[in-house]
Image 1 (tube, rainbow, N blue to C red):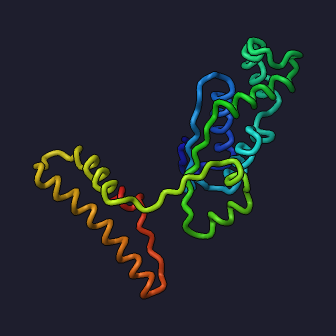
Image 2 (cartoon, rainbow, N blue to C red; image 1 turned 90 degrees about the vertical axis):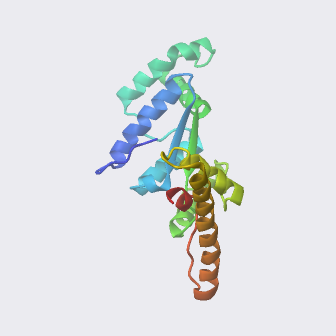
Image 3 (cartoon, rainbow, N blue to C red; image 1 turned 45 degrees about the vertical axis):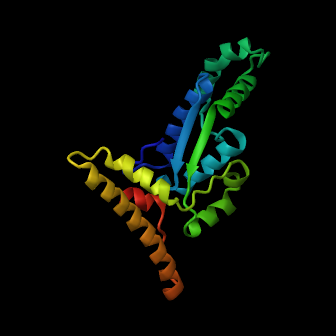
Length: 202
């Protein structure tokens, strides 16, 4: 997962992508890339991710000297697997990309709220075509209780009675907020989103 700091831009994002792809393609270890829409500081980030999902690489990411280093990194592994028989840079880089596709899993977390989600889906079709989409909807009551209980277990100086009451109170707050949001929409035609994230921040 990338760390967004002040001044983080496309150049730094691409440097992070280089490190991640070098790790995924240069070693047999599997790698997970976790990225959320709150980390999008420039639309170029999403364009690069779209290319990564579609082809397993980001075009022109590696300059020639770094591309040579990457090819040398995978030369022995390619020979051991009987790939890249000619040992040419083109064959070795294709093998590197193949390993990236095999070892890298991208986990993208996007909120469907607002226009930016729809706009990005139109601009970057690989977000749909090359992904398995898991929709996270409203949590049931027992899930709210389980999550609240887990978080409140770490709070010191709570008697068991108070802890149980706090768990029930957290569930009630979130459930009531969801019901009020539906009433708010029906009466005033305005939408308030009561999401699992808002429950975790409770």
